[in-house]
Image (cartoon, rainbow, N blue to C red):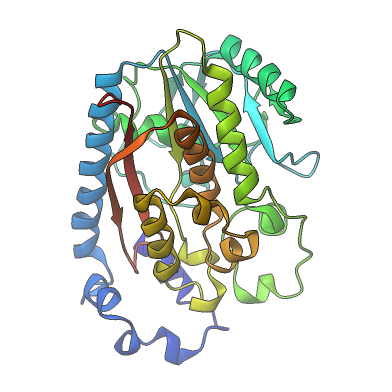
Length: 337
């Protein structure tokens, strides 16, 4: 992900003083080093892989019947025709190319696999249909989808769940069906920036889209999802698939680094279990801090709060050079994941 920073540094509208590594914070200078992040990238990725392995072990110990995944849609299914706040993907088994979006951006995959490698995502269409009905009856006018768009990549936040939780096999041997709920995390920029990278010149005078769902509404949706499964005999795992603050979304840092201060503030609330203050976070704060994708975590924590789950382990992997801070967490009930 240092490649994103290298690309950002070519933006002529960023002041030269902000681009000068001599003025960067200590962590950013250390990660950048003398090789523009190449050496530090290996240690950073290993920290992520180790945390993913810990989450996967917890998932295997729980042995879920289905994995509910909240993930953002970055101009994948959500396009000009319709952009709902939330959408349940009631898909059957589906073959997807998990590197499709990376290929479009010219980024190599970490596994060194062919660009058009395909994996099969096991669907949970019947569970998804029932969940949608339950949510509508609970006051959420849920959108739902039976097919992915044929002219765009599969939502990568969902594909990445399988890809990264089955890291050694690049998603090819993940045994659990997924029930995805996509979230319009990007709100004002879902169409304006197509959920992606822009220069400051491209952002100037942009026509913003309506806001996405608020953190509080996402939290309430999570509660409703938990309620919908209460009373069933299903073993349901809950996953929030996203990073936290992204450098390319933080205008006040010139898109050079994530808003780590804001991430640390929310991480403290998360680890303290202070969900009242957590869900009081405003949409304006989320946008200012480049934390759009953290809305997926508000959904997941709403479910955790409804079920009375305890946070038993977490880690926030911080970076300045590699685009986004990443949180990992395991919630348990009565000593069982």
